[in-house]
Length: 329
Image 1 (cartoon, one colour):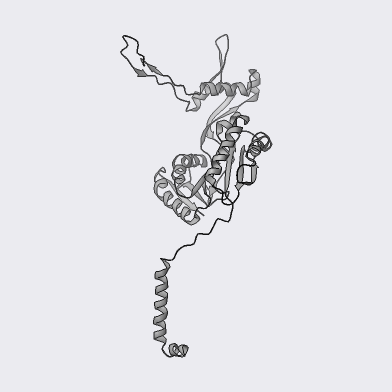
Image 2 (cartoon, rainbow, N blue to C red; image 1 turned 120 degrees about the vertical axis):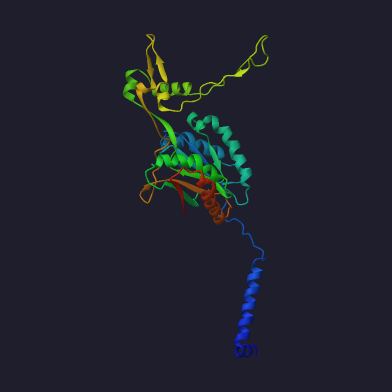
């Protein structure tokens, strides 16, 4: 009976259907949103760097030592480690579902402090990072020059100095990885010249560390002031070396006859890349990439929109003239 009523009056039926659809659209804005529990167990990523070490050396002296200490931490489920031949290693520690990652991160840091003295000095100097970021990448932010003449090293240094700090402040971003390299002072030792001077690489390294240091100079006329002193001034000492010539003039050995052996006599010193392990291009042109990782439980869509907005705003405004950002999912 009701079906025949609406069949005979199609216009009336259309009006009722449109009214129901409009009411549904208006009610949709006020419906509660159910939040589903996180299915994937939470995890922490421990990142270490051992410059110059191969995968086996890194695994034996660093990765295994950290694994033994982290095994059995509260809420521990399993862990996965990866030691690479470029001197970097990552250990992903997965916890049971429902574990508070803030508490777990504190526990992991406490255990790392206990084992830190057993790690090589080079690893301790680089620092150990513990991040709440997931293992996968959400998106990649690419930095390139409009002319294509700027090389990947210069672009990587721009990304490290001007872009990464801006993107870290986006809600939902757990960690950022630079797909490139920043500037670093490279010292290429010549083993034949070292042998000719009866020197070792360790002696050259010790001289560089000793002379390229920052020392607090103190003050002149500081309290308690001597009687009659009329001057109070802070002593400003020389900062760390900033160019290749200063490194070349580092004295490795002073001979009794007054002659000296300098770093430039046994090594090639230049401003190069901190790492040559990654090379990136965009449409055949040099680029530097920034891989974005989210924190566990973050909304991927809102995080991606936040990264885009920050890249177009604060991060993009800090780039030198002739450079631009390209976002890619």
